Image (cartoon, rainbow, N blue to C red):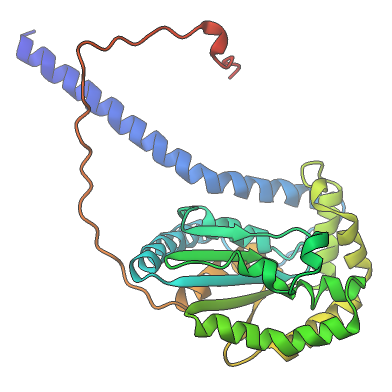
Length: 314
């Protein structure tokens, strides 16, 4: 074999290896969603142990994945538009425990830059925060230009859990209802795009999802004593929700209801709707050229002690 032929063969082999490595990298990227999907399937099997399987029509898996990946591609375009236009976006996710808010938030953020799109999930207020203006601790999480903030629960805690569990007085609830429209009007007036979603599930569906968590050791941490008490107080939460929607659904800041009994449909519908709320266009980018690596002939890589390596168990 001639030297030229040998070099060509080596180049072809390197190109083939590179193609395979690129393909493996892309498949690994898609596996992120498949891992989440496998978790859903595992929970479904656990649920079948404590309930009778239903014949309810579910969204086709192939359609789900095809649409999810397509919508996530559109979310990346939206992200570029938000950065380019200096938009400030706030999306509020509210709903009962186990309604699926976290699942859709994961799918929205999955392909986005965490420096651009971040999640605000505030814990219960501490002693100092309880003495502040009610909205104060939420204000610090609002976006600057070119940012998206997803609130996994929000200031509407006062209209829901705080009211039902007796963590605030009737007067404080009434003050909240009086002031929240003005607060949100100020947000919108400052240039913030405010979108509010309520994830709606049935009594039976919440019961099934709670049973699923009880029987799944990987999910039991999600069930706090507060969650269990919320299950007992279903009707009180329903009344609180109805009052909240009635008094805080305004022309400046309306609510959107997501039917969330079918998790997959809820994710697709919510992301599709979110994209429709912000007119955006694809931003053109200059071609990315990978610079050539600098090689210094004087550089010698030093040895690394064997005991510093993580054992290769797999």
